Structure formats: structure tokens, C-alpha cells
Length: 237
Image (cartoon, rainbow, N blue to C red; front, side, top):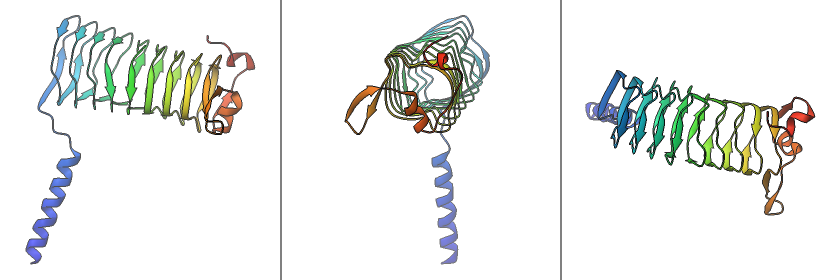
């Protein structure tokens, strides 16, 4: 009986470990593919390590359920990309442009989004913790149920963005453009905000069940630390 119980516990532990460890169907590492045109590539359920896609054109690429570690997408053009449940660690997107691509349950950690164009995209149920956003264009972007905590935002353009159930807690935010954006259930607790354009920014107020103009006091009341001069709150530099 004791032997049966011990075997059962071992089998249970092994099944739990395998459930937590993603199964990748292929491994690709240490490749230089830069400055190429790549169409209809299927890299789903793959693990990619230290691969250079810089200055490449990738269209209709499927990275579903993959892990991308130390991937260089700098100055790449990505169109119709599928990044569903894709994990990015220490990856570089400097000066990249991404169009009509799908980020659903994507996970970014320690990655660099530098002068990246994400305008008009839909980002849902994703995680961007400890990620650097520098001069990223997210105009007209829809961001839903996404974790942006512990990240750094500098000169990020979120004009006309729709931001719903998003966590900016403990982030460093400077010179962000929220002009005409719509916010609902957004968490700024512990965020440090230094310069923000809130011209025409609307926030959903549960008390009146409608949107109203965002005020600096809304940010302060949510737990944000607002610094800088008063002029910095109405200018996007």
C-alpha cells in the first residue's frame, strides 16, 4: 500500500512538472537571418535563442506558443504576425515596425521596445513587466487586460488609445502622450509620473457610469507620484 502511494505521488509530481514546463516542438539558436524577406514562416511551439532578424521583412509569421530569448528584431518590418501566448525575454525591437499583428496573452520581460511602431494594434491579456518603452508609437492602440507594471515609459505616444483594465503600477513614466485617450479601470498605484499630456483624456467614472475628463487628482488618488513642473503635464515633448 505504501509503495502504491509513493508511486502515485511521484507520478503526480511528474505530471505537474510537465504541465508547468512548455513543450516546444523545435529549437533554433545562434542564427543570423538579418536583412531577409521571410514570408509565411511557421515557428509556433518553438524555442528561439539568440537569433538575428534585424532589418528583415516578416509577413504572415506564426510565433504562437513560442519562447523568444535574446532575439534581435531591430529595424525589422513585421506584418500579420501571430504572437499569441508568445514569451519574449531580453529581446530587442529597436526601430521595428509592426502592422496588423496579434498580441494575445503575449509575455514580455526585460525586453527593449525602442522607437517601435505599434500604432493601431490590439494588445490583449498580455504582460510587459520590466520592459523599456522608449519613443514607442501606440497611437490608436487598444490595450485590454494587460500588465505593464514595473516598466519604464519615456516619450510614449498613446494618443487616441483605448486602455481598459491595464496595470501601470510601480512604473516610471515620463513625457507620455495620452491626448484624447480613453481610460477605464487603470491602475497607477506606485507609478512615478513626470510629464504627461492629458489634453482631452477621458476616464470612466463608476459613480456617474460614464466617461469624464481625466484630472491630475485622479492619478494622485490612484496612488501615483506626480512630479515635474505644471507645464509638463500639458505638453508632450
